[in-house]
Length: 447
Image (tube, rainbow, N blue to C red; front, side):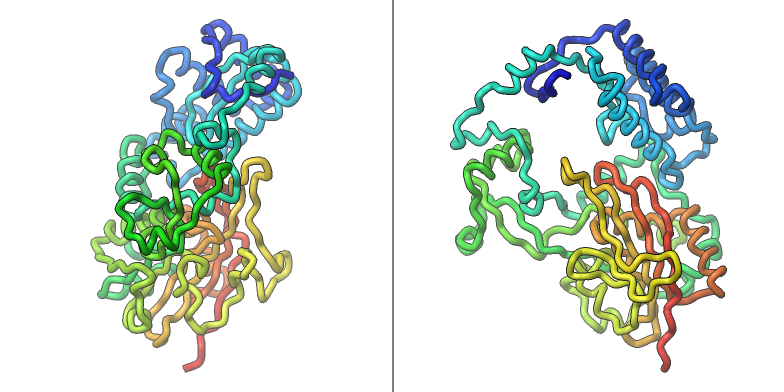
């Protein structure tokens, strides 16, 4: 089998339309796709668009209608069938190239985060090995790194300012019709949202301020630079390999890391904020917003409050006195203090061992009384930011919300205070599947 070569460094020779058709035919007739009509239809569609020069037109809505027979009112934010289907097709392709297609000259890939197929010609073994063994530049030149160190994930700024993410997310949704689908009437939101929607005053949304490291810049005061963290030559080299085309690296010849506790929030928290505010906006209701670092106990006494993020990033998520069944541990897991039949005592996220990417997260939706027992607090919190996003999606999209309200009624409802545990499938840092795997009513404290 040919050695895999970074195709950004070594462009593959062009692949002809006939070779594309032959490649597709071999894949579709393989044992991995021969008995999977939907996966066949998925590959056939994206390859037809590729051959027609229209690959950039591929999107979730189009694939949902053409491949999965969704109606014209199909909404990808409610129904993740395309994201799930794409994930399954990628796994099938991976298995195919590990077995039947190991010696194929042309390789078909669907990059994560896109539906456009990519065809690359595999280099002969000798040529590939020669390219892979090309000597790198000295450590002092940071453009030559070949691998990403997982330890730098904490240091790399993967969190962005919330407002910027909200704007980006809003713009991203508009072209493909990827918008939330609110219920028609206030009553449709059921017991989950009743305390918030029945209150004439706006709820207070609390956005997390996790401590993160950012890159230093020339305008930073001396006191920040003095307390910043320097990087080794190897770390700079590897970091540059990952971010070499980014503005922040081009203007930081000797990057250092500066701790900040006031600047950033998680992407999942920001998207969750968008979803919750959009829900209230659709009903003509206003909301208040504060960063977690500026919230006071008085705020939690006088408002209905919605907290975004777990205690790892939002300390207020763990400050209310009501005893909970699902709690976050110091090991970044969720502990089940009152396991019911079929439930586990601990839930932990899973990762791809090769890349370090998150594959499965867990999240908890908690609804409980506030400090004064006069108002309600909702906590939407994942072990990771992706789980927080999924929790917000669960309480703001019609299908998930309907299931949650139905389970609350089945638990002897309407249940006012509860915790719902979610299992979240993740691909490319985006939640793809959300399942409610446990629901625990919480006892209302005696007055």
